[in-house]
Image (cartoon, rainbow, N blue to C red):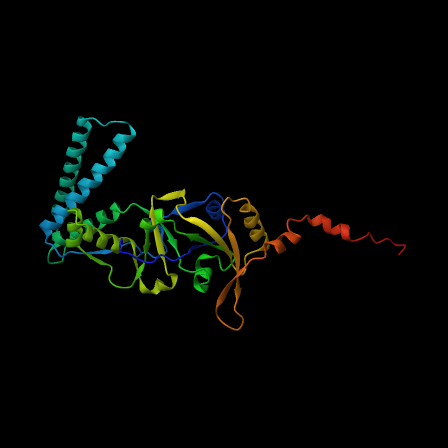
Length: 315
């Protein structure tokens, strides 16, 4: 995931008009989503290829469980400001015991005669390693697209053109957390790679990271997706807001509100609108005439009456 790659000059976030969209534009926030909420249930969910025996998988699982429990207890201890040696020793002992308990429970379950597979222990340990591996990846993701004129993206994510597409540039400080999606290939990740990652092998870590975070089915390739990884939830944007593109069906009032809201921004934002390319199934992006928006907006409906004189019976 750290291999050199050319980041596009602009990356785009298609959005329906909503409170979260206003947060992104006015408060300069991004929402880092839990991958389990993505519309594709296979996204960010690789399968483990158990190319190790049951005992090796059990050892790996014990390490994963022990590390997770230790991290959870350490975070809790930090919150209540318990940091002494007795606390650290208690965390270590409890984490190790919990890992041993998990392994013992799985070994017992594997003796169930109802399993009609050759090596139930290997199968079960593989399943638990896969689950623990995914639990390690507790980061959030902001999905971004490589272009602002994709018809499918506008239909799927831009509220059928009633929404907006927000364009960002990528400062150097954010580049390390930005990753390009690879489409197609296998969802499998070898257990040997996971084991090597736990032993500190950076090449193996990049391989596992890629399998978990940056691979999708080939059907999604039209998205040209890049992913920004960070803590889950709403965060201050590490990207630089540069432009807003309005969909073909976006209302004039939404355009006016967004243009007005960003008018005083210290770093100016450019505004565009999507139009059809006549006679073709293609979209074009054109500069928005913001002055034209202000000709009739904002308005007071009752003011229209001032243009007409009352009709009397004498006329």
